[in-house]
Amino acid sequence: MTTDSSPYEPSLPWRTGSSIIMGLAGSLCRIFMFGASNTDVHGLDRFQDLLDERADVDKRQRGLITVSNHISIIDDPLIWGVLPFSYAFNPSNHRWSTGSYDLCFTNKLDPSSIYAKRFMGLMLDYRILSTFFTFGQVLPTHRSAHSTYGGLFQPTMTQAVRLLSRQPFSHAYNSAHESTNVENRPDPSVLSPDISDPFSSPHLTYSTNGTDTFPAPSSYPSRKYAWIHIFPEGRVHQHPRKTMRYFKWGVARLILEPDVCPDIVPMWIEGNDQVYNEARGWPRFVPRPGKTLGIWFGENVGGARDNVFTELRRKWRKLVEDERRQRNTSTGQEARGVLSEGLKYGKEAIELRIECTKCMRDEVLKVRKMRGLPDEDPKNGLVETWIEEGGKREGRMKDGSLVKDV
Image 1 (cartoon, helix red, strand yellow):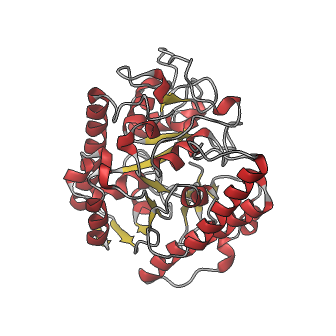
Image 2 (cartoon, one colour):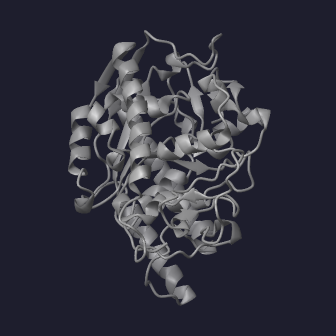
Image 3 (tube, rainbow, N blue to C red):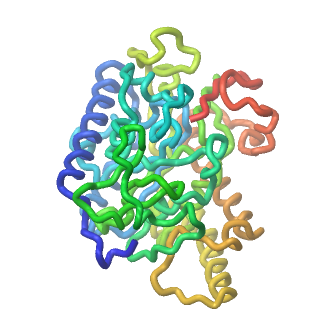
């Protein structure tokens, strides 16, 4: 996927569809937050200034990552209701996120995979769901517990890393199921999740499993240095003491691998777990109004200045250069977001991801402390602590928390 033959931006019908979906969702969330809830927001002016600096795509110098705790299945898009209406209708300066493939982009009539239908209270066909989330700038992500295509190195992670970078990119991928979907055409069946812009070339798509088809947003120069929001806990965690689970390593890839260090804004959110508590009764699909919500935006801990991630990125670049020399390959057009076996599973690469993930979790904890909460037990940040849950993936856990595997 190079930019030599790529249009600057998606087609007008596609951009219009995305603006409508993003705008309506953002507007409804804003109305709910400030019309049906008691909402307290801190640091929003500083965050809006950062977004305003990014309004002109051609002048962007780096991507943007926002990182927060995850306390409800409606965290995204609800939290973005804090932004004024004008931001909601401007997808080019709005967040990208990830969504579970088996919940939002499923292609089979499996009763265990109709969460989104239940939530909407409507029997929508799967093509509509897939279209809705794609227009809503959600990237289809396979979960390892539910798919053999999941994991840290799935094709959607390549798209995420590239969205935080700038073109040109080579189209080299590591394996058969990570190839760009140049030859495949979208399946027109309503039972298929396949989505593509009918007004664009098929080389602007990619596949998450070797058979499906999704737009490749990083193919367009207008999507360079985009904004991605991520919940590194990987699942909803509703704890009475407002603590977090350990962070997964995907956030480390998004920080280490883009061509320049992204702006990184840690966040802390509260109250959504009362709007959509996992122990709620009937009607389960209705968000509860009248709750107190809070969102805290931290300082930018990334960007051009020296920061906690500067040295980690320097070490990553050295690893990449050493790997390139070992393999005797030239730079050329970088296969950004595509890693060799050594950069995937090498000891130094793994240690770097662990350290980077810990640093990011610590930055979110600083915002949590700024909010006024006491320090949590350091063991909460260790994966070993959560192994005690055993094979149980959701429901009420031993520590009293409610967990939803989304």
